[in-house]
Image (cartoon, rainbow, N blue to C red; front, side, top):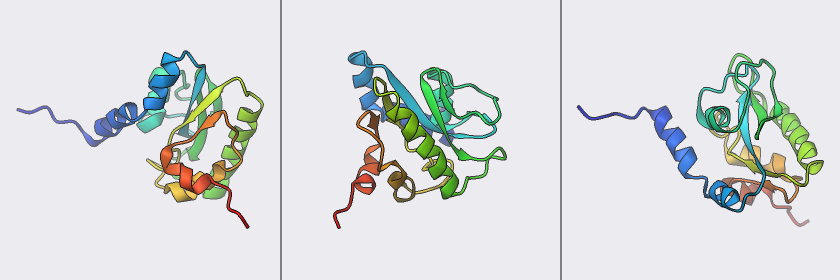
Length: 152
């Protein structure tokens, strides 16, 4: 009988393999923070949140947890019932993150595709929230075309 990988395992394997920038940061011994989409229940059981919990010090089961923990930074994209937060609420948390990153310039923040996996939003909905992010914030390539300033 063949070993079957479930969909979640494939997503998590894909997430780990699609992070060449992390390999480069580790090789150059850059202190970086893994930024991931979380839920307000503090359950990090799937996707980038699971990776944050397993590898970057995210705290599991701490209701209402957001912000930096260990080598991770949680941006809520789901509520405590695991339902997607409204975009306006996610934008509020992204704003808090951008403020934090601006006040911690010595750190590099590697942002995953927050809100675009389990929360179900598209990059064009989430990426513009990061337009004001500083140079120490590394965004996913899918966000790039939506975060450039438009000339008037």
